[in-house]
Length: 285
Image 1 (cartoon, rainbow, N blue to C red):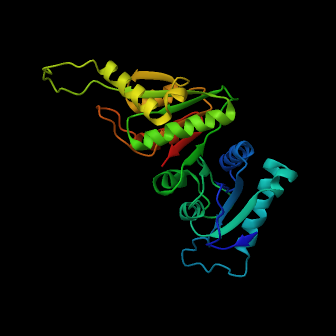
Image 2: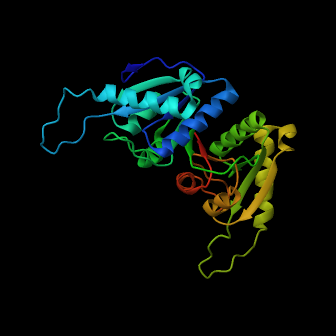
């Protein structure tokens, strides 16, 4: 175990943020199950920093890094068990959680965080941190929420953007590992006319159905595309995705993107569903 801000990062890694909260323990369990499926290496990262003193002297004799290291080791062993804990690379890094996790996941395959949490150390907040890493991490981010047992369904948002295409590919790859069924969802809304009558009224549902079919076929090829359930929903993307993901194992979205039709924005939507979904959310960059 080391206490440093830079370290060698081998390929094939899943990084998970741990802060002692129940939310981060859920993230640790999810990450451990993921590496069981993929054979990747699991890195559990805890951050620490000197507490804000407001002009009150802070003891530099207290071993803040050592205290954090002990808390991380205890959490990993309690959550995963002694045998699995031995296979986890544990990292203790000084700094604010958002930057620490973004740096630690530099070339990782996934970064996993809890939806919110506050551990026993100053600065170990993972609520706003999850929103920050979604925006700034260089790899896909998984925000883990407590959810029910597996239902064998993965929902992915599609809007015609490159980010959504990558999200779709990730979802299909995950489905191969888990045996789940992929549901690709596209959302649309009638454009606002502000009292004006549109000269032509396109069949928006048909347009979006064609866009979805083309996106799925283009991203996956005919064989995989035929195994994807395609859903066209008339709603704002946020509502459509949250509704479709009820009871799902995971919801996958692009970090940002805009399709060719009104109402298909997946930029702010990705942050909103990551905060409010009832299942783990993968935001793919």
